[in-house]
Image 1: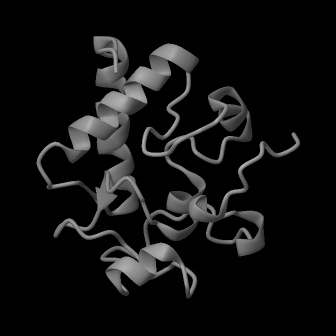
Image 2: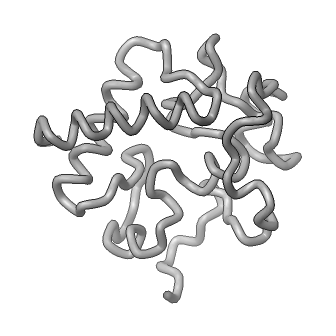
Length: 145
């Protein structure tokens, strides 16, 4: 991966700190995780002008950007307060899984992890779950716009 511009890297650091504060989450305490994710977000800002999640594989990044589902903060973070990148986590480094539906891969992997600040974040909490496709069940073909 090319080094992102200092401008966009700083913009992503500022965004991540502010978003963590607003949602009652912490940036990952695991060494290297926060830096790697923010570098990927900043590189996508350089390339596409949008902070596309760097933790997924996309057959067509431009289509994903139009879809908006994986722009940070992604739909899963805004609906369930679950960050599969592990960028936004609890203070102990665990992801918040309390709001995930039963059977979700995150809940299966990490068990139920309580939300330490349930009154913060979750801007899309009222969106029906059927309106948000989980990242692990995304079809292989691009969706119509």
